[in-house]
Image 1 (cartoon, rainbow, N blue to C red):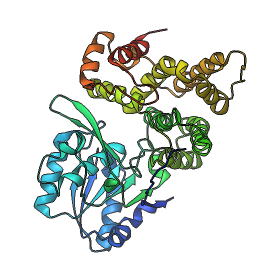
Image 2 (image 1 turned 180 degrees about the vertical axis):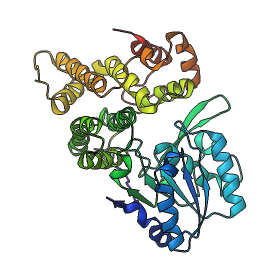
Image 3 (image 1 turned 90 degrees about the horizontal axis):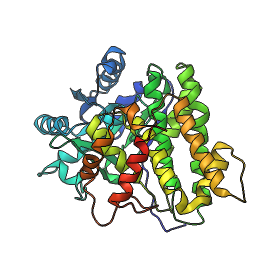
Image 4 (image 1 turned 90 degrees about the vertical axis):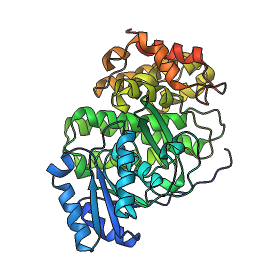
Length: 391
């Protein structure tokens, strides 16, 4: 296990009706004037926004609203939010929604106190300051309610990039599983895939002797495998939703990733898919991760075999561990299909002839992509082609 620093200060309020505590929590964390940032009209139609506003009014907290966050959140709305917050002298941002609204809120939070272009922080500049951000989660997926990360698509060229800093970890997050029960099955499945992928990016590592985080990763993956089908079959299953919601948080606040070198190659490859085709992030990951696994498996067959045995219950073939490793990948792909996820380019609407464009969008340098296996442009092309194969 490697040396590490870990700081995860987010305060959680979990359970039924917890959104009614938003005002008290904002007051506790010092908010005086709040931007409520959300996505579509569902937050309004469901009555959630009204309940949140009532809780702020009860605490005498002033607020303004900015809706319109979309999947693969866009730079244009971030610029609008920054300008609005400066004009209205906002000192706190509350994101109500899923990962898109939260990531957009984080981008606004770092842009308000910065004199330059917020995009600087998505192209390498270190974040020094940000407005406090809090969240009310309505979609279990991205884990942004507890993470130090944010991903934004810039509309100039449709480039999708991320930034990372403890300055943008939410100061508090409200997690009410009931708020996720109206999600369509596809969104539930895409969310489950997203959080599963967050674990896999940490699980496939070259760092040795990481048993504790291996076991934590495996526990989260097993929970998703067990609970996601229940939530898809019966959307009102509170206990399944609750387990999935907490799994999504644990998957990405980095408790599963400390002390080990993480990969993140599959996410980089998927970011270009969702930027080019505007597909759901989880759906893109369902296509890219099995392809990445097939390409990189021989780098560490025993780690893939361990995944197969511990997560999908395969029998270990000590004479031919590669056989076990392949079976694990096949079972993972079967799980994705069973919950309604695409696993090939064609199902996403992606095209093999666009692979050169996807590679160009990656803007690769000599360092390559990922860490488990350092991928060259030729490797990336091979993985995209595996994802495009129809067999």
